[in-house]
Length: 501
Image 1 (cartoon, one colour):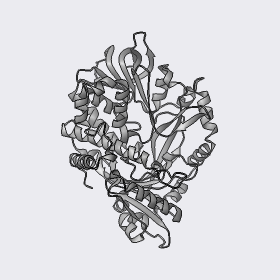
Image 2 (cartoon, helix red, strand yellow):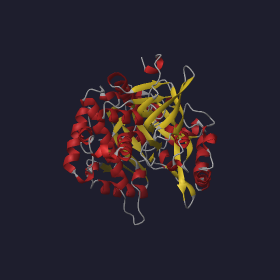
Image 3 (cartoon, one colour):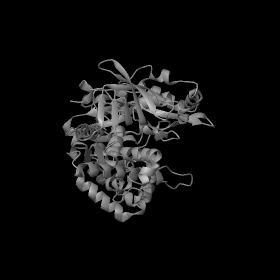
Image 4 (cartoon, one colour):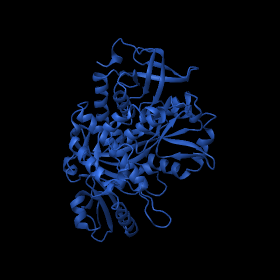
């Protein structure tokens, strides 16, 4: 039985406190426990189980983000060349995640890799001569990198029918289409993975896990430690907990908690909540005709996270199709949050950032209003750009997780929206927070190693280094420059994670 449901209360002091029971905290706790098993670590999660918010299977697309199919990671420069540097970085970060998960399997900390990761081809699909030419140049550029070895490209309708029969059904033969395909792609159930890690921490480590416990406030102490007010939501009991190091991995609630800490580095940050919705089909006749994640380009004025895609999902052993995302709006910072989250996050330190970001993103505001106002019939029309004869009765609307897009200070505009993932750390390296959404869970291991590098630099370079290289053999090396190591590690993770590409 979880500690929180017994009479046991948190201790008054810990070496490390992690806030939130999502993939970030579970990853960081596992790494810290491997490096230093005697560390006294506590995880506080406000809900009744791990991974109920952004990490939950249906609250994200489940794409193992490797930049194989996401066109926004490969922008076209003014001179017409394709910049693949961001794509290479993201591909390398996902390779780090796979090495960490393979380590967990090899140690017996988690079992059943197919419960959380499965092979699923990643494809980019575009329409029209201009975009087909862009995709061809992107393919040629990416094919030069070892990280994208094996990528295929085609404009041939017969070949595309082999790859995506559901999408090609009833297509006009004169329609210009182009696609790339990477068989190394994956579908990941981050919720299942996180709960497996949580179970390991709960049963086989001295990490203490407290469910239904919410950290309400974080204050600095004169001795350099942090004092937190922790509320037991079942017994309605509050107590103070002190820690040497705090990590805020609380999804949308990271922002107000970071603000409460009063660290200089948090000034000017604001948050803009965006929710998502999917059209989902469990019709197995349709599902069997689509075995890939197929991404296309975002429409004009749409944010990068709104790139339309038609995906195979494998959740709890069952296959389904997912199409979206359609943007939604709520003032909540978490799916199970409060409608007062957004108004209560506004303060004198971030007002200029928030106004600047809103003023310079009016097209985004218009886009969100249009998306929220869409009927199911209108959403089906978007789906029919992918599946010509999609029937309304085969698809249901499902609400995805809440994402809080980071708004940060900008000298020119006052504030600007950030669509990436950001790690905020104070000067002393005693408190860290993860903000932002994409590429998120896929790069959790890289992000948490980034936290450790910033907060425990001497240990990462010293006493923890040997264990770190056992967990992530490629640490400190650039895979893009090392074909031999890339092949070796991909074969190793393929075997351990039982991938069948």
